[in-house]
Image 1: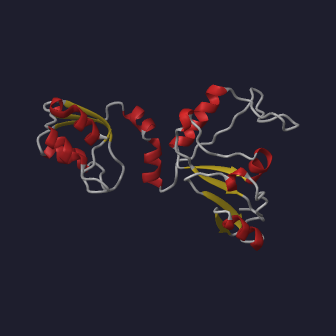
Image 2: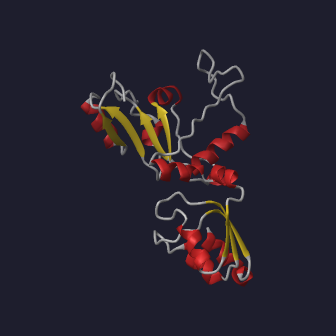
Image 3: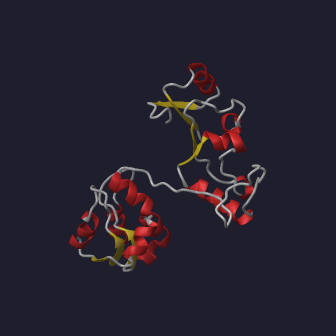
Length: 225
C-alpha cells in the first residue's frame, strides 16, 4: 500500500508525513521492504496506528526508519487500526482464519417460514452487501441442509457481472448432496470443496469428484464431520 501511495504522490511525497495503519515492513517477502520505498520517496515523518504483530516485522520497520533519521510516531488511532486490520491480526497471531457468521433473519429471529417457501426475507441492499462480502472473503461455508433446501450458487454476483467468487465449502457428513446441485454444475474459476466423513459412500465420493469438486474426508465424530 505504501509503495502504491508513494508512486501516485510522486515528488509531492518528498518532505511529507506518511500516515499508515500498519507498520511498514522491513523484510523481503513477495515484494521488497516498504521501508526502502519510504526512504527513497524522501518522507520526513511516519505516523503508525499499529505495530505489525508479524514476527518478521514486530517493530523492526519503525526502528529502521528511526535509525535512518525519520520521525516515527506510533499508536495514533490504534483501536481503529486494530478493527481495520482484524483479519490479518487474527491470522498472524493465532494461525487461524478470521470467520464471519452471516445470517438473514427476521426481527423475531426466524430465517424462513415454517413451510420453507420464503425465498427472500431481505431486500436488494442487504443482498448487495452479501455479494460484496463474498467478493472480499476467501471462502464461504454452508451445511448440506442449506444446499438441499435452497440449491444455492454461492457465487459473487455484483452489478455488471463483477466480483470474485469465493471457494465454496459444503459440510456433508454422508454425502447427501444431490449431484444435480448448482454448486456442482456451475461455471466458476473458484473450486468447490465437499467435506465428508470417512464413512461416506465411496461411489458418491467418486461421482462428486468426477464433477470437478474436491472431496475432503475427515474422521467421524459422533457420525459427523
